[in-house]
Length: 310
Image (cartoon, rainbow, N blue to C red):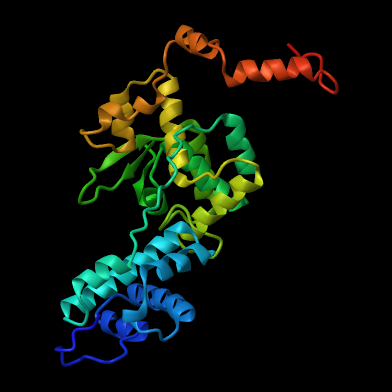
């Protein structure tokens, strides 16, 4: 409902009017563009229907009929709710009307898997990656740098005498020195011979810094190799895991990878595994998927290699 006492009262206050109220020239261009896209989708569906005629069931039907992702639907509802709240603040709508109109959409994201890569998976990933991208991939895998740190490494940060790369500090990160393994030293030496050795260490073939396109290429290369999606942070986790597998304690790993003192003791906690005898005890409990698979293999011997039949 619209408050008729407000001087801006109109008999038909539509979504188009709501967009005009919500959009502010002082907002960032990306925010304005996002708002235009959201209201464009709403206007194509609802048209110039007055807001007082909209119902919560109609909006739910719009969400169920949309083919966009759940995250996009949640974004549309957040923008619509923010615009309605702006109209309430301007005394154009009643607050009770806004609360009952827009449903709350919550997106449950799947948990992130912290399984490190194996050397064979890394090899497959490199074989399907562009040749120029293989160099920063190996560098990140052997240093554990974050992607923004990897994209900003300069030749001046390489100390050839101490075989270290200096990662500059920021307002919330300390400067640290990461040792260069023999593989990385050979790669950098070859890069220095083929390039002038100034400016950024890694660039795209067009001479641009590493950015979103690089991340997109990594995802495509991992999918082409038949692996789960590999992101830059997966290379960092793999570096941490491989260091822990050598017997290195958590504190040195935390110092190298740039973790704060708050979380450095738990930097490798996700790698902790129970004792082998406990694992065997759990996996031999019946029923479970392993014993069920063994039963199926016994029943369906035809066409199977005799070696895998229990």
